Image 1: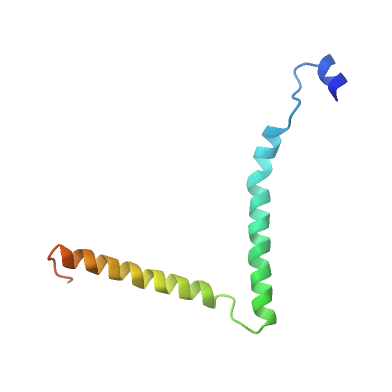
Image 2 (image 1 turned 60 degrees about the vertical axis):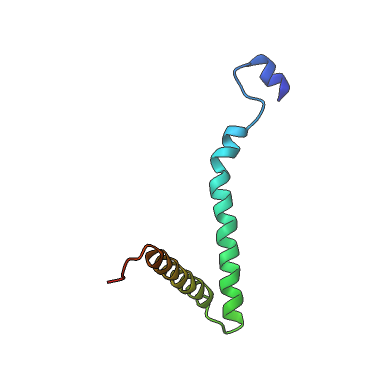
Length: 80
């Protein structure tokens, strides 16, 4: 490889551009593999795989409502 680079100096010695280009898809594959393994594990244990995400979203939404209500109350406004 170094001989080819010496003869054709326009080539690059590293492949950073290629690695940076494929990194998002590689990270995406790892994320999907993790999610898939969670779903399969839940199914093997007869659990609903969406129960936890639903619970997290529900609790976060309730928390946001509480925060908004507290800010409105601090400002002396009424909730219609």
